Length: 317
Ligand code: GH3
Ligand code: MG
Ligand code: MG
Ligand code: MG
Ligand code: MG
Image 1 (cartoon, helix red, strand yellow):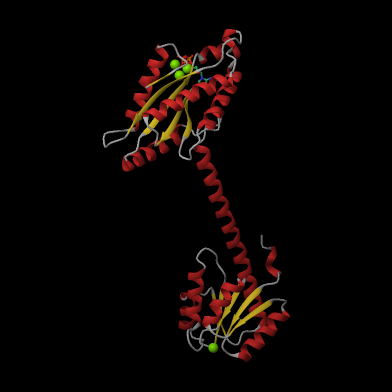
Image 2 (cartoon, rainbow, N blue to C red):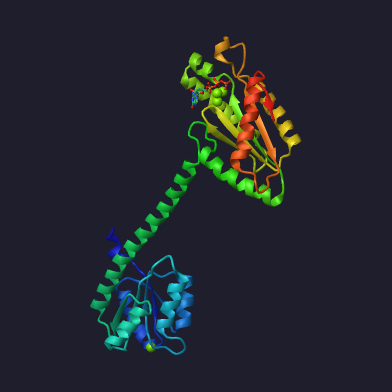
C-alpha cells in the first residue's frame, strides 16, 4: 500500500536556528504538512514522545546535546516502531553524513536544501514508513495467531476441555508446586462405564454427545482456580485437585458420583431404564523426590481397574 504518499505528515522540525526553522516550516506548510518545532535536542525528545510525529527533520549542531544524541534517544525510546529521521545540516563533509547515518539517521541532507529535494525525500520516507507499519501489523497478527494456535493445541475439540498435552503440562507444574509447598495432590482417573455398548446401541455421534455432556459436567465440578478437568483420551477423563487431601478427594468423588446420577443420561443399551455412570480411581500423594506423574497416574489407573472389577459406578483409591 503506497497510496499514502501524498497524505499530510506531522513533521517534527528540530533546529536551534529560529530563522532556519521559519524558512523550513513555511516550506513544509506550503507542501500541506503539519509542523511541530523544537529548538534543542532535549525538547526534540520530549516533543517526539508527546506528538508521535510521522517524520523527524533534525539539525546536527545545537547547544547542549546535538542532533546525533537526539536521534539515538528517539531510537532507544521507541524500539518497536520506526520513525524516519532525516538530518539537515550545514556539516557537509562525507564523514559528517556517515556519522549522521551511524547515529540513527535514515538520510542526511546538506543545508541549504531545495524544497523539491526535501519533498522528494519526504515521499521516499513515507513509502518506507508505510512498509514498516505493514510489517508491524503483520507481526501483531502473527503473534495473535500463534497464541490462538498454542491455545488450540492444548484443547480437546470434542469436549472443549484441556487435552492430554495440556494435562501433561499442568500435571508437571502441579507436581513441582506440591513438592515445593509440601501439599497433597489428588488425581482422579475417570472412565465412562460400558461406553462401547453405548456407542454400539446409539451410534458414535450420540456417543460423542454423551462425552460432551460428561465433559461439561466435569468442568462444572472444578470450583477452585487450580482444579482442572481434562480429557485423558477416549472415554477417560482426569480431574486434578491441587492441595486436596485423601479425605477431601473422597468427598469430591462422592459428590461427583451424585452429580452424574443427577444428570441422568439414559444409557441406550438398557432401553433407557439405566443411566450413564462413571467409575474412578483416586490417587492422592504429598509428592517427594521420588514421585512422578507416571506413578500418580498408574496408582489412579490401578484403583480404576479395581473400581471396574467391583461392579462399576464407584470410586476406589
Ligand atoms: P468399561 O465399563 O469397562 O469402561 O467398558 P467400556 O465399554 O466403557 O470400555 P471400552 O474401553 O471397551 O470402550 C470404550 C469405548 O469408547 C470404545 C471407543 O470406541 C469409545 N470411544 C473412545 N473415544 C470416543 C469418542 O471420541 N467418541 C465416541 N463416540 N466414542 C469413543
Ligand atoms: Mg544548528
Ligand atoms: Mg476406557
Ligand atoms: Mg476399557
Ligand atoms: Mg469405559
